Amino acid sequence: MGRQPCCDKLGVKKGPWTAEEDKKLINFILTNGQCCWRAVPKLAGLRRCGKSCRLRWTNYLRPDLKRGLLTQAEEQLVIDLHARLGNRWSKIAARLPGRTDNEIKNHWNTHIKKKLLKMGIDVVTHEPLNKQATSQDSSSSPLEHVTQPGNNNLDQMKETDGILNSEENSSSSQAENSSGDDSLLLDSICSDDFLLDTLWLDETPLVEALWDTTPKVENTNSNMGLMPSWEDDCSWLLDCQDFGIHDFGFSCSNDIESNALQTIGMKEEGH
DNA sequence: AAAAAGGCCAACCGCCCAAAA
DNA sequence: TTTTTGGGCGGTTGGCCTTTT
Image (cartoon, rainbow, N blue to C red; front, side):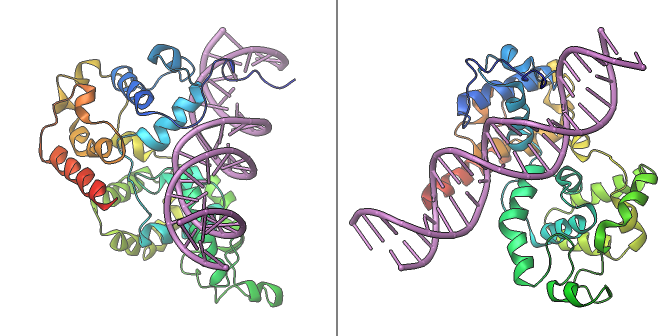
């Protein structure tokens, strides 16, 4: 007696999304906002599971996503957060603006794990592998400056959950605005033990602050000024899709678009 | 140049939890 | 209070791409 499947499996398409499907999903969400994912496929004219639509949106189509490899600073932050949070990828992702849990999870499994093992660090406990066998002393951990081995803070974290929203918000916006100087961000975070200890306690969503997807029908096509982040973010569409902004009926004929088109041109030249 | 092996990542699956009925 | 439902999460898989032999 499991629960019912989230959607009718019959006639539901699986596998890679096409540009056409992406377009439909984006158009729908831009017009209607994020609501009832179960209904999205039907309303958007997609033969997909609602869950699949949500995943596609959150992991790939969201305008605020960063693309490309994690920077060194981001990677270090992931390691530090993982030391405390374990495989709670969504919590970790919430601390890295523009990154998804899936992306971080993949990066961890394919890159960071190997790096840590190479360095002789246990990927679960973040303790040196040789030291684990011989000693309980944790004072010389390579990650000690930010790591509390054994995740003992988790209970405490739960108790104090949600007490530092204002600090989190300020640090988040710092992260968002740093535009490339991630190492400064990390330094500032890591040098403040108190902030570090409490940084991940709350659940303040970073994404919503950047990209409010509540219905904005009047905004989507005619009044882009009410969505200040959109133009800044629309380059992602051109950057990683086979279609352009014009396909959505937008008129983003500005520097961003031309930059994005240049990017595409560069990519094509490179191939 | 071709085949095999390994790496990477988008997407799926199934479980869990909170909210609604 | 119990059941149902939808959203979210973490683990896993499949297929494409790159590197090695």
